[in-house]
Every structure is written in C-alpha cells, then in structure tokens.
Image (cartoon, rainbow, N blue to C red; front, side, top):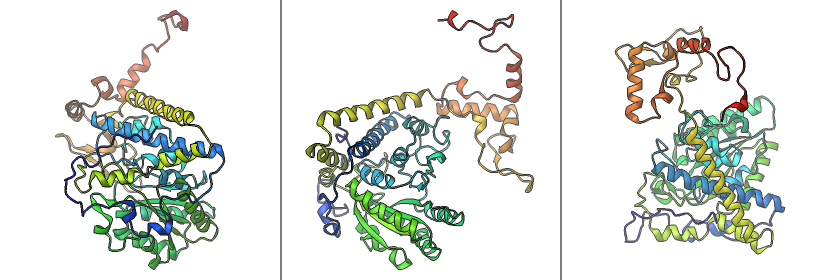
Length: 442
C-alpha cells in the first residue's frame, strides 16, 4: 500500500528527550475539540471514495519518487515533500469548483496533482525540462497551471498571501462567484503579510479562504517555539476573518470544513480561515537532517497516517476490498514510473531562452530590463539570441561545467541557423522531392 513510506525522519535525532519537537498528537493544543483521530463523517459515494484514495496515493508515490530523483541529482535546487499532508491537500482541493483558484506555498507538488496537473508535467518541471508545467523555469517551488487555475507555489514564506487577496479582488471586481483557496504553512502566520492580507480581505469583503497547513514546524522550529498563540485558527479573528480548525489527517473532515468555508466566502462574501492540524513525515526539505525531533515522535504521528486510515475504513465498511487498494497503489506507481521516463526524455530549455517571458516589453518605456554581464560583451537580456559568439561560447562552457544535458541539447539555434535549415531538404523527402514511403524504413 502507499503508506509504506521509507522515510528518513529522525535519523539525525539525538537520543535524549526532545523538548524542541512538536510532541505526540495528543499533546497538540485543543485536538480534543476537533475530535482528532476519530470518525466524524459518513463516507461519500463509492466513486468519490475511490477518487479521493487514488489522489492521495498518487501524491504519496510521486513525493517518494521525487525524493529518490533528488538524491540522484535529477532535481536541482530545493525539494520540499508533503508526505503525511495528503489528506489536507486532497480534502481541501476536492471542495473547489473547476473555476475556483488555488495558490500554495513552495511545498506544492500535491496541490498541482490534486488539482489535475498531469504527473508527467510536474515531474518534468522538477527536472527543469521544457515539457514541465512551467516549461522548466520554475522547478519544484514554482509550479503553475493556468488551465486548472492553479496559480502557483511561491518560494517566499507568506509571499503569496497578498497576491491571493488580489485574485479575490479580481473575482469580486469581475462580479463572478469564483473563490480563491490560499494555502500557507504555520510559519507564514508570523509574517507581516499575514496581518496585512487578513485586514484587507475583511475590509473589502473578499471571496477568499485561507488554509493553514499546520504541520507543527516552521522549518525546524516547533510551533510552540515560533508562535505565542498555538491555536492558529484564532490568529485572524482580530482582523475580522473568522477561523476554524479541522483534523488535517482526516480527508473527510478537511473537505467538510473547507466546503463550509468556501460557501461562506462565495455566498456571503465573508473571508474565512481554516487551520488543518497535520504533520509532515519528512524533513522541511531534502537537506534537513531533522535533529529537532525524535523518531518516536514521528512514529506516533505515523500511526495516524491519512492514507492508511482512509483505505482501512473503506475496507472495513465494504466500500472497496484489499485487492483493489493494492491495485490502485500499483497503478499509482506505474503512473509515476511513466512520469520519470517522460521527464528524463524531455529536452532542457534552450540556453538563449534564459530571458524569455521575464518581463513584458513595450515601446512605452525604453530601457534595458535585464543585462547579461557574463562576458566581456554585456548585452540586453531580451536580445540574448542576437548576442555575439563570445557570450554564446561562455554560456556553453558554463552549461558543460554544470553537466546540463549534452552539447546537442544545449546548442543555441540562431535565426541564421534556422534559415539555413529551412533551405535544406526536410525529413521524409527524397532528393527528387518525392515523399519517402513511411513503411520503407524500419
């Protein structure tokens, strides 16, 4: 099953009692009020149950494989995994309409997959390839899918909050009934943008629901050490945004609470905040030695694994059988296998595309928006393709030093080269101009 995650959590932990850790689930403040770990809702129809389980399994298997690919140097930059948070991600996004918007943090692979972005495109983006959902320019922390109204992950803690208020303002201005779901971590509630955004959302009665994914740690700092108020659902009330809590390890509870919050934001134009109490089984990022918590703490939270709990309930209530659970997990693994193959075969972006779509260029404000000073011949970044041979040669050497693809993949294609290619015979043509028989070659 998809719950057998071979996590490294706690490997660097010291043997003594960890006062810096988050503590066991029972030690989290007021979890009794949300009946944490108890069955609180009836099951939806069978097909919905199957869809929810498949999404959580897909996210878990994707994250596991992403970690493996990072260890193999296939993924550059940082990598933040949401293993353990699948119920919060899937439960919340299942409550959205197709026309609603979603914004997230840099731990957003699960959100993209739950919203419907193809695993191939997500994995290719992690690999920095052209076929990624951000065309290889965003990487792990900056996934984007406009067609599914997923407006991205953001690398700055709390940085997406004012932007999500802006999207909500646009929805209101255009007089639609769309809502934006804005996700943040517990650490973001300490940022100045949190208070500013709450005040603005309440003042302007914006259609937005904020979801705090409280995984008990702001990077390596436990909640009780970084926030004076540990019931985070109360943090927004002073600004006029009412808050509530849910069991973030229970996909049905998350869905129920977020559904009510969305309805209030959509129909009454009252912004809402939801705190989902959950836990991440892996470190803050793949570079995290996790010396701030013990193995025992992680194992206590593992006993409440959201995927195992939901699949076990489906089996116990005869919704699906154990064989089908195993089959769904196998299918998820096969999908991720294909995603890795796809990403590996996808080309890297051309070197000359470095400055493409960074700014919107007009003739109204003549200026050098970007300057490439990597060579003795500084030039305008937006005219990278027109640069001389020296900048091109140095860029090639830099890419070769970094081991990015092979020379053919990296080679710049100048307009002159492309014109020359157009004059040559195209594929599938004989020298006399007659098309080649498709069946004549092996």
